[in-house]
Image 1 (cartoon, rainbow, N blue to C red):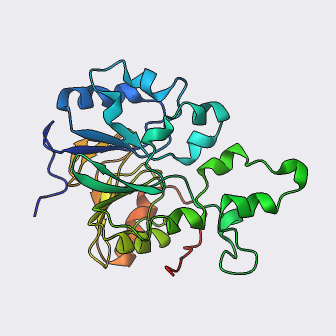
Image 2 (image 1 turned 60 degrees about the vertical axis):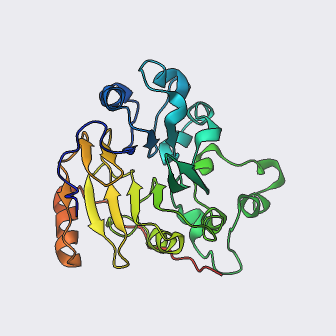
Length: 267
């Protein structure tokens, strides 16, 4: 088995996954330009002040080979959202990229959408949300463009993929969501790459899926090897013992409010 933390040489991975850029494209794009992977997937939170393709055009790498899922900060402003090329957003679909079937889920879980989602007040779709608003307010707020709705997950559950990419983490991160554990299992993926938490790590779920957190501005290849270390932390292999893993998280990150682990049922 390949050591996930043996540094990868440029060009070794067919697809490279980039943790939250937050506008720092000049940090990782030179590595992509030098390595020329078959494709690149950005894991959300681009913070674009110009259209994405205009930013990418500054380097010798075809923008059409750069895909993404959106993050919560991509909906902080309507202008941020408008600068993303919708045709290369992997959210809510399975796409073949460089010979690999990749499933995408952008955005974040919000309690206003998911609390009580299995009961009479469930908000399954965007339309359900809008129907609950006063007539004059029936326009989706910009921030909810980056909200995950149960329908987004349901759209993926009847498909098969090799890799899942998301902005949110599954339960391998202490602020992650176990619904993504189940989604990966249903899709049949072997690897799951995510951003959002600015932390390079690898952990294996009980069902055998390797989960790779990718740090802010860092790059990992499609086997989870670190091509470029991120801006926040050195890479970490989490122990499978839950108590040890949780202790490591708490030592590595500032304490944050913990979100409930919502689950979904595949019908």
